[in-house]
Length: 411
Image 1 (cartoon, rainbow, N blue to C red):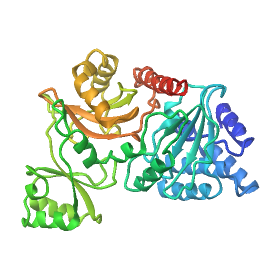
Image 2: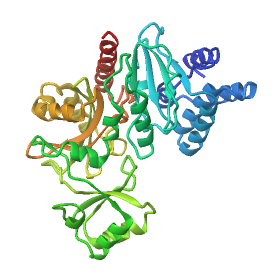
Image 3: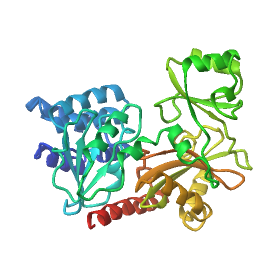
Image 4: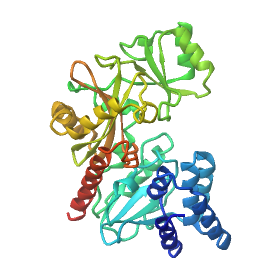
């Protein structure tokens, strides 16, 4: 175990509500550090005190980071039976006191606030809420409150309850109205941005398995389910992320094959928009909006229409990294300037002080919007020897978020 990890463990061990936390554990994993030593130390803590919820929560994080999601979530649930508030200290802990409302789930359930506070001296209190939370008495004294619960089918009741609990809230709160977050479904975002000339947000319909089955048999046409739609279509199960279960369907028979391999009962249906560049490659940008200003998170370049950063070959292709570096370095005077109207419309219509988007640039210059959410992963973990341009950009993003919190806290 490295000295830094040992120190973090010692500090957490001395304080029953203090966790090492997601950001620190992921940083260790990305650096190639063996997490077994930390795991064994946490096991020892739980052997000494079976109710050590902070240790159990950190063990849950280690399991999830190591690819054991379900086992990790089971430990997370166990930790939350004992304690609903945990503390993460950054730097000397003399900075902002931030309280974040979060909910149970994996890494995509909540805003990555632990990363957004990286490099600060903040003290972060993670207060876990759910659809049955009676009150916000667990929220400790703080400088600013942040609603970090992301949109998902599972989180809709949580967001509804947060909206009720925050009615009349008088303390400083970053503008993250739960009811606005709840509208960040794929169909909700499309509806929110409908009619905006600078943004293409393809109309999206919720359909059930029976409707898709009839479409596969030819009993229904795409336009019967989604006005103006035709093949090819994008189909994905509701509630999934990272392309899980998403496919481009070119014909009814392909839809039948798709359904035969899926068990879900509810799906999103949308038209496929070809966003290939002149070179035939596909480019997807992730952008964070903080107080109305856009900040680049990453650009992925791929030969396939379904673009994911981790599978796009960015680490293996120097030319793709050079393109991303140029995009990030010149973002303010180039991409952000070209899409200033679209960015202003996104901030105005979505109405949140923090959110992220995945998007692409169409040949006609408009912005193609794939998704908007508050829980998109942003981080600075990529190795500097391969991605030397990313840490400065991400530190700028993190500093902007921290400055926005400070501004709200200062009234």
